[in-house]
Length: 439
Image 1 (cartoon, rainbow, N blue to C red):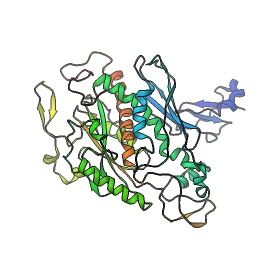
Image 2: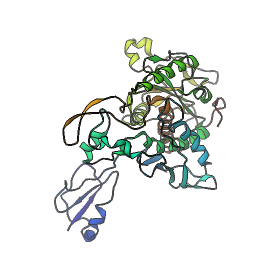
Image 3: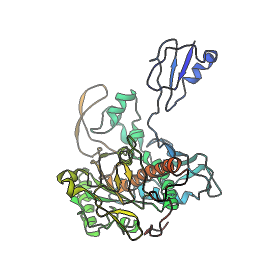
Image 4: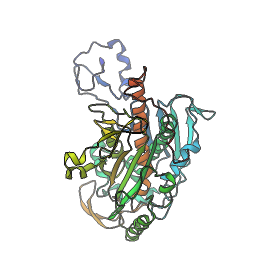
């Protein structure tokens, strides 16, 4: 049997002579997965087998692959491309995982998991080696019997039906990969990324809840220049304004007792982001950020800077005038651009908002269909968040940090490899006024 290996992921090849002497390997080769390769097995049949990345890896230079399922043996990630000789510990990761874990308050899912992480490779004597970092978190509180009804009936607005449509098979317990437990790997990798950003450039990524259902934090109440992690973590809903936070908590409590769910908005800012991150045309920084946060479970919308609100302004009202600060740096008087212009960071605070829908799994009777196409009514069981946004805060931070560290490495590799133009460019280094948050 002839086999061919083509590096073109889109166009088929009718050539059969390539690698013919390795035909005995065709069975093994067909089992491999390549992110940018197409494998054809058999003579002149380009459609026989096409393999591409299955969507579990994120990043180009700082690459993260997550694995595991909600009710499997565990979840985690493999981080590839992390710079060597950087201090990192399980404790560094655990701080962020504890912010994400279930059962942390009455307004989150009651599932009890410690989410205790173990670093299995890539770190020796407390420092990174430059080789892949493997982080593992065991699942310890699975209840597969809660999902017996879902084995035959689809939960409305969940991923049950679409996973069957795509794969022809699915993991019923906990939704498998569609469960938010998948995000453990993201948050662990994001903890590493956040530490690198802080050390290298003094960059901080902070997110907070700015809306729960109809309770909205008024614009301008939070001072992004002075916002700290302590303010965000001062209450269980992660809203930095105590008065608004109480109203948000009350709204979640109300639907929780009714078996309902509600959504909300997470606002995320990036302080001390180096200018120059992002690339035209298809790899604009806001496009990379949008893809990152919209890959999170339950996310439904993304805005940066003025967002959709900017459509109500004229050009003269929306433009951010430039000025020179006391250090001779180019700054903007306003920040409706959200810290990004032309797809490239300008050094101002990056501001974005991510909308999350109400949790799909609720305790009320709903109309649905079964796998064998019968119309039925379903009351779902299991343990779920009445509102996902409080626990989504560290997830958003993690994805933003992963984008930024990847872009930082790209910027260094292309534009900072040789001496910069000091008249127009700034060195990437920590700023003295960077931190209001302890490292």
